[in-house]
Length: 319
Image 1 (cartoon, rainbow, N blue to C red):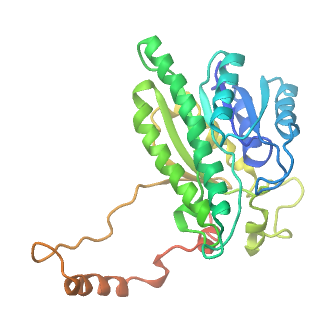
Image 2: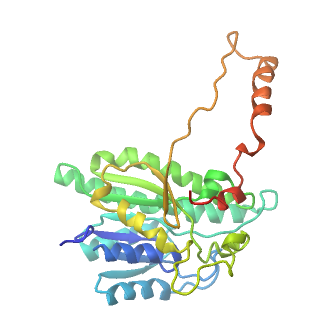
Image 3: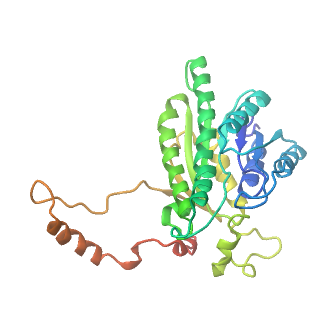
């Protein structure tokens, strides 16, 4: 019996560790040939010396399991590097079918303390990095579609965060970049649908090098409350990777422009924002007094806990 992704090729960015590694391994187990991209810098803020080791170790792990994989070391936030990454997939495997954008860094700071460089660096890696690879992959698929005279196979899986959904007080750069990725994904989904390409975005919750201290601050996720030997950590990246494999597969052909939250054996499909209340002016336009009379009571009557806080999101139970 053939595997779901047999004959397909994939790029996974930030795949040297954590979520990206788990996703690259999952795509390979489902039959895809994989380009494992990672910049190889040890610091979660993007600091340290560039190393080929993380990407090559994952590629070697895939090959040891009988799969096909090559490694790529580079900063996908650099436009030319992203171009060369897509070219590597095409030259090595004949075409590109799947793009999983996962690479990112953190430089946390409250908005009143954040420097311009801390803002720019995080937005650059997350948002521009997603755009760069998406741009060159979309050019590839559009050209193939024109040559074929019809749709081709293409899948994009982007990575956002619950920090975008609920806010994160110490991460204005990260939350903004992750929100931008959602907008990029929905726009891409509309633009590329006629070429046979889908684009979806996930908000994963997983214990990785980037999030270790975040979950350490939540009692139920601290070490000491984690599973024992032989049990899978509820925050293991392996809970996330099967969804990425599904979204990359032919089975997900009708899933496009969607946002899904995933962690610990749970997948939630997030609706697009809906109007909560609507007010019409009595005359041609509103006056200050009229707005005060309409909106102030509305917000006064809303429960104080109706606005999400980051800590509340992290504390959500699977129910």
